[in-house]
Image 1 (cartoon, helix red, strand yellow):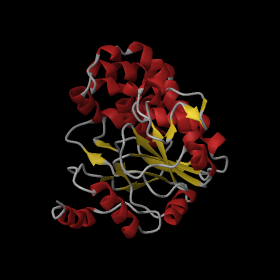
Image 2 (image 1 turned 30 degrees about the vertical axis):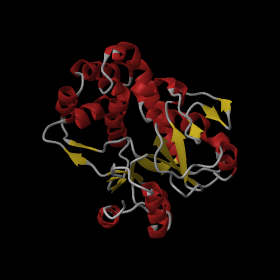
Image 3 (image 1 turned 60 degrees about the horizontal axis):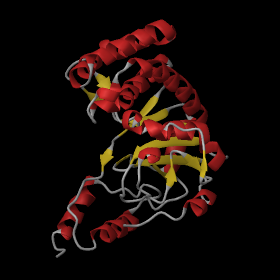
Length: 290
């Protein structure tokens, strides 16, 4: 597998206007463009792995303000929190920020992204259309009492958002999932100030310590919904991008090097991620590998 360079050299090359955090919790393919993409090991405080990349509990090897130890319940939000509190120390000239997952990403052109953001829009994952409201979907798929707790906290302590919350959660069936986005850095800061203020009120009231591994990700699930509430409340214009999922492929001889070389050959500007059509061609090649 291609390995990231050591943390210090990466830090010196990271100062780009656009920075996309890519969340990892295990070894996986790393993006080759160090100027735009910042791989970050989430949950490092509770992990014995060394992924040889930026971690969500340090800056240039030094301890920092973080919630890394809460990764089991906050998921990719530990990277979000780290960036809110620390990214400027590493990348003082960052003006635009995004969040991807190690196997979920947008296919994009950097110049087009910046033009979109400068027009006042933010970029989000293509919205999914559910069969019923977000409230029902959350209550069926997760803990219904957690939803009622979140609703109460919004009503009592964030009253300005209550109408938007009810509209999005109870009168709507469309949602942008995954906590993925690209936006201006100053908009990102405002969003984080609100999001983590809400979650800090809800967290003590939710018995997530007793949940199974899936349901324990409760605050990541809540944030997916709250992101949509925040967008609605502030009437933010959005550009919706398709989410491409990097598939899990059986390990075969030299497969990782093949995929890495393939990506480097087919990249378009920084949109090096391959489309489904290209992946079909890649699978045909893989079949011939002994």
